[in-house]
Amino acid sequence: MGKISPVSAKYIVHATIQISGIVDKPDVIGAVFGQTEGLLGADLELRELQRSGRIGRIEVRVETRSGKSQGEIIIPSSLDKAETAIVGAALEVIQRIGPCTARIKVTNIEDVRVSKRAFVIERAKELLKQLIDTSMPDSQELADEVAHSVRVMEIQEYGKNRLPAGPNIDESDEIIVVEGRADVLNLLKHGIKNAIAINGTSIPESIVELCKKKIVTAFVDGDRGGDLILKELTTVTEIDYVTKAPEGKEVEEITKKEIHKALRARVSAEQAKLELNKEVFKSNASVASKRPAERPRQQQQYTDRKAQPKLTPEEKKQFSNMLEDLIGTRGAYILDSKMTILGKVPLTELVSTIKSLNTGIHAVVFDGIVENDIVSVAERANIKYLVAMSSKARGSQKVMIVTSENL
Image (cartoon, helix red, strand yellow):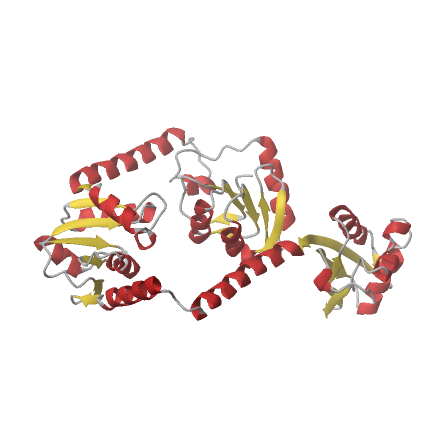
């Protein structure tokens, strides 16, 4: 048994094993040590590496189905990258286990430090939150908390659709129409009490009736979703003015200064409608002019972009190789601007890792499907490429979505 524990390992080698017969775990471990003996020289002899604590205990999981065995081999390592890769490659020379033929394939080498770093950041956030919650607030914090609580208490439900709204909807001659409850709360927090939320993608009857009686300003998020809400509002009802949150931001998260700046910069509904139509026309014209006679169906996901992704042959080759390496692993590579792999993380931790790193990420290659939520996170982190097996996401002006079909 090795002296190294998984806690002290820097890398973990993951390999799959397929055997054309029935074997036990000791048979697999014996084959690993026996058939690699003398292969890599004295410095990388597996028994010596375990004895010195540089290779941990080899974990083997084997199950038998229909007279054949398959499973997984896990080897923790505190060697450097190159030595760990050599040890991993050495596993693939094993062709027999006991009397049976066998095939071992290294699926990936996990950098434990990337996962640990993400855990440290998340845990630090929790500890900081606990510290803030249990610390004695100063006078200003107490005053702000009381003021915020009072404003939140002022939120009410309006009309038969029970829409979230400020307390001055009925008294005010002008109202502000926003997208959701959180937007109303943010405006209340900054003293604006005549806001009401659509609370969905379809325009409620209560909003239509209000627009007939009030001077209406539509205040939407600075993204494509905001444009879609505006388009529907201008189609089904009468509004007077339009304004948007800063590009890439939502009304619920902007500051008091940004709110007042946006309201001062509002434009008439007619002008906004013209600008929306121009953008749609330009987008459609650009796509039509670049569309070949027989355009492949897989590239339809880029109809919202000004141009198709332009990848150099070298980028295509690198992305293709990385994506092929990740097939079946449910993992993701994080790359910098030099196309160097900063680390590998499980797909379930990808969003939290991007948020924690925030900057310095050039591209993300992962074994999965691009969804709208990861596109939004990538836009905020200024990521240039999202490379995946396929995509269900909307187009993006900031992030190039590349699928296996494009490569």
